[in-house]
Image (cartoon, rainbow, N blue to C red):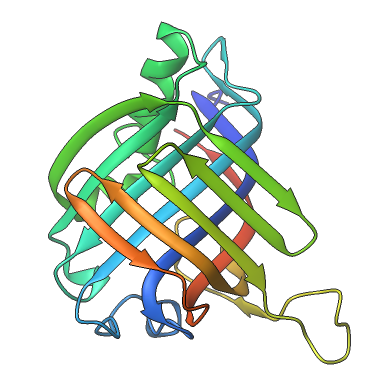
Length: 207
């Protein structure tokens, strides 16, 4: 049996510019975004990871992208931000995985991307507590979400399941309490509390 070349697991969350509830997951990425195009930042905080013999434990990366229409139609503009605390070997591994070049679940990013804007190395602050998630990367990304509580178990979020999402096939519903994205020529600002978010554990393996 061939050993996997890489593996990552940890916590993911995102904000996007769609009004809550974003139609993309339930339409298998076929729906028109509510504001015509999609702008999103998907954050991944690695709890355990490796690329061959390079440890990736404890690092984070963020995939920032925009689409001109429905996500499944491609044409994405995409860039990657990697934790600047990573050394050169770790930077190379994380950048290659996050951009989709190493296949696995994030390989979908590479398939959909028409304009790859490169990789930046910046300090990333990732926070998670209960149903709250937040992320700060200087002036590039500042976002936070709050999970949408279920009625029967108000300490747990409502979930969507059986999805074709690259992070997980089961996503918690959330609203973005703030979403500020200014990276790779992609710009979005919102503090309304009415736009979309998701969060989930992620567990990826590469070929």
